[in-house]
Image 1 (cartoon, rainbow, N blue to C red):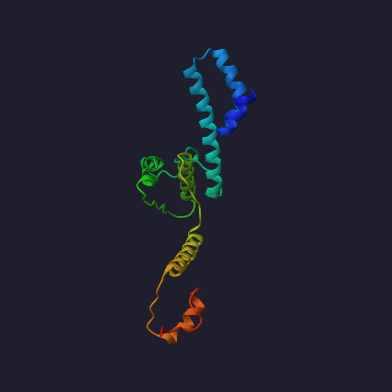
Image 2 (cartoon, one colour):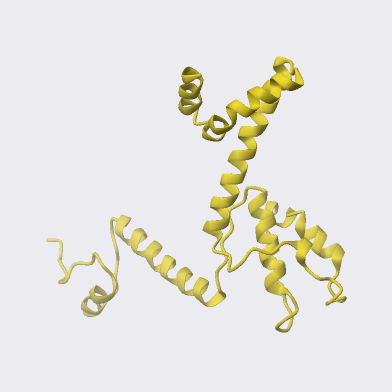
Length: 184
């Protein structure tokens, strides 16, 4: 059995290595043929990987809590169109790179639905991030500034109209020389 454990480790089949004994017992009891046994073994490994991946993606998503669509009380808010929610749950909007904006007054379930759609997307293998809008905007501004700095750092030649403004610009733009240099 040691050789099997080594091979499973080398193939990075950690989940399967924990269950190999019980799978061998099941195969013997059920008198599975090779194909059925292989299918059962691979299904076990896939289930473990899927579960670990989902747990990891859920953690990275930073959801304030986990909610599902099945937990949503449509009877409390009869105005919500179940057909639209079911369509969103199909995640076609993700595949089409479309935005979804949930609007309504406080307490109508917007956050619950958003989190539930996020959990659905995580289960489908997508990466999700829950972030309040104000923090998203701050981060976007910071990332845009970083991108601009990187672009400036890769720029070979920068033209300016006035050398008088250069001292003011060096305070704001890293990488610019403190005093203007002139080609002779």
